[in-house]
Every structure is written in structure tokens, then in C-alpha cells.
Length: 148
Image (tube, rainbow, N blue to C red; front, side, top):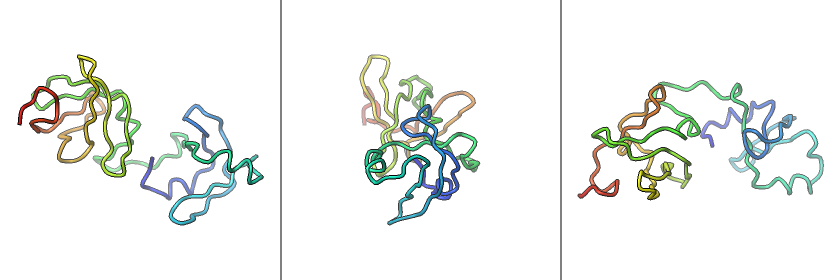
């Protein structure tokens, strides 16, 4: 997922499906109604193109743009441990849900209950990739057991 379309339009190679999917050479990219349309080697008929509709397109890591201070790729958050404002472990980020608003960090707590936590400035105090943790702001009611 990206909000930086020039990264996509400059791609030379993509993976279809997931990051370990099939590598495909990009012959060209153009924008259409705010979305990138890819011309891919081997996809030379409308039927082949239609069969790929909805397929994830992943970029190789070396083609990702450099990040600014305080920016993160969402995939870098998966596997991080979420801590409450007191340092207590809530759980690990197992997946990320795109909602059209702030992404939701999803996983299970120590009791196996699922959680979804908004990845937003009012919810997240700190992300420390070196330590492998995400620290939450104090928000009563955000995590089960908290009382407003």
C-alpha cells in the first residue's frame, strides 16, 4: 500500500501476488483516474489482464523510496510488540487492516482475544523499529481491561 504514486510509476519489476510471488518486468505505467495502470511483459491480451484484476502488486525492496524521519512502511510494523502506556505487553501485530482511514493493527492478546488498534497519532505514542515495539498513548477503553 502506498500513497506515493511516483514509486509505482518508476517501477522496473514487480511481484504479482505477494512479495514472494511471480516477478514480472514492467514495460510501462500510466495513470488512469488516479490509479496506476501497468503494462507487464507477458500480459498481452485483455483476458490475461482481466485475470489479474485484484491481484496484489508488490515492489522489490530496492525500489522503495527512502523514508523521512517518523515514516514507516506498514509491512515493517508486522511482528512488532504492542505495549500499553505502562509498558505492559498487549500482543504482536499479526496483520494490518486498511479501512480508508487510519490503518488498524490487528493481532491477539495474551488471552487469545483479537484486537484492532488504529495506527494514528492520537493512539500511537512511539514506534521503535530497533526495539521492535509500538508504544500506545494512554487511552482508557482502547484495550480490554481499561476503564474509561
